Length: 443
Image (cartoon, rainbow, N blue to C red; front, side, top):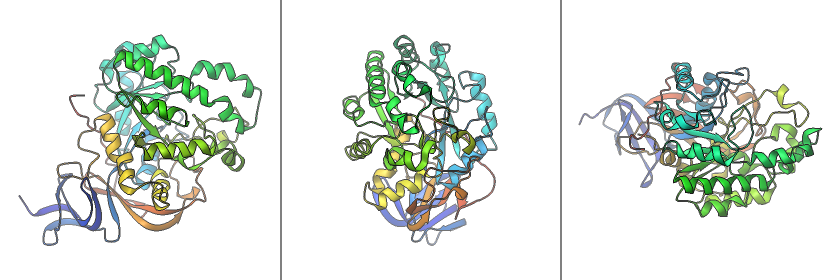
């Protein structure tokens, strides 16, 4: 084998499947070609990672980049720019755009839009609806598709599959994992009067209460088991859902968000107002504590951001006319590294939740491991860097984050995608090189 490489990452603490080691990584033709001492080897480029930690590339499997549609909030270029500045190498983008991503033509349009403009590698969800439920088995197999997304409760956009009959139709169509926003739309409608005439935003978790989430998740799991279909329950926010999900590990995987792991009611609503409003809601501290216990118990499979941008003007509308959603794709890595620094989880567990986990859940090909033969994707971090997250760092068109002013320990220093350094020291390098993520053929 040639001892010449396109890139050598030198002297970092490298997080491999076998543990951490201070060593080098050699990259050739976009793949990891060698792990070990490479001091004498030739390389077209070298990256000095001494005093840094080299993680397998971190993945965000839930983002909303608004294109096509309300691109004044975000588009594929600005959203992925924020992602690489935050240390993310690949994103899975949600279908509640305008028009929604429910057809072959809509998927192909998104891939065309992303090509040459996306800073990260990318894949798109197909949105489930009563109209396309019987076609999902075909749509889920298209190139650049990561899976199916189903909204059981109303959120941003028009996609909704509320009743058991249509949920069952979606689950019967196809075989890949169905990703689900699990809130019971019937209960949301029954309780809407408590806020519809106007209320304080602190009522958001009262309207979209624990029972709304629990009822939906119980219905989903019963229907999934009957259909023999794997599901991925997004942004789980309640203590009560975790024991239920722990009993369904044969069919269900679980995502949690940094927002629910970091913020808590009522303080977040008092401090941030509608800028803390999201679906499902940020709840009181007992739920946050339960999510951390579920991470440590191994119930949680991955962490995503649910990046869902709205402008400051839109968020400032009186509740409930204010839209739900927080930015997050750029802040997930520093927020979670700070949790590592404060001892809430290990770095190895974070890698499992943000790299190996998404790859395992969705059957990604060539990503999710820092191992020879895999894509040369890396998130290089300084675990000792002390920074403050600030609105002026945020690349999103909206220019704000609920974590503005948060002091953190741990920061992304470089993002490397298929062997190309695309972000270094908070600056973008070169042009967008994002390509569609590939998935295992047998799924």
